[in-house]
Length: 126
Length: 187
Image 1: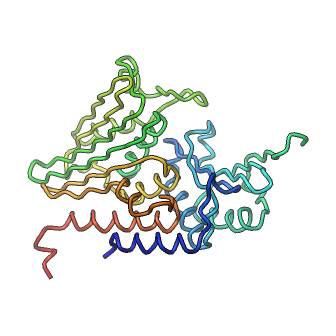
Image 2: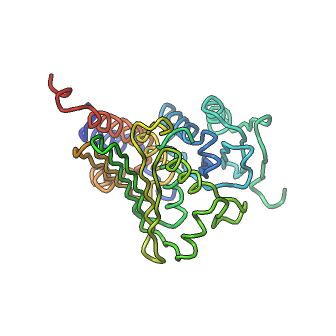
Image 3: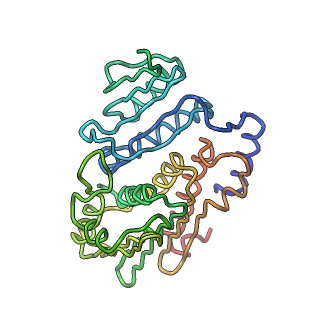
């Protein structure tokens, strides 16, 4: 039985172990959650993102969702805004790709070029 | 959409787009009447009468990126293909209510699917929104309210990954229990 006591335990552990962010961490993961994304499997992709961040204790990564980006044929789409400020859009993401994107890009800062749709550098001088 | 829970996620995303602060999701299974009712209600910006008429047509959207909107049309199609109907009640500044009735046991009725996962994923990506889920099976109800969860959590965000997992498991377990008859709950 999962109970509110479990939630209290999670709260206490979180307060003891994580530095709670004020305005969110610098790394963001954004999942496209329009009708097209949902129909293509975005819920399972978002689930995998949350699971992987939990497993790797990456509670400083900011997760959010967005509507249709106008690229429905490439859904599910996941955008990573990394520590260098690059915005990288990954196409046709599934849960197994999510795990590799988290390990390679979010943790190690290495873009996976074969799955990207677009890479925007963070700096204006690029 | 293969699950009603995916339609519900889609309609919750619409509420989010409409700047909702609170979304109420009601699911009511009545096996005596053979009816399943689903209502998604938000306190977002609402729609004019013209907009309500327009959203019922496929390809209407408020979005700029792509001039196609299918979510509500798919919802209506899902209901009508199994002997049901949909309705929308909305006014500017007064939020929107989207409802549907389905015939339980109809061969074309999609399964409810992973409603707990829908809720967890939605809150994982939009922790600023409050959601109340009220699930009723033949008069027995169970309510989940993120405002109560926030009270317990204090400064810990609703989308802290272990909290999201808790939401999914807590909702899944309680809804499954509701689906069983009271005799089944006896040891």
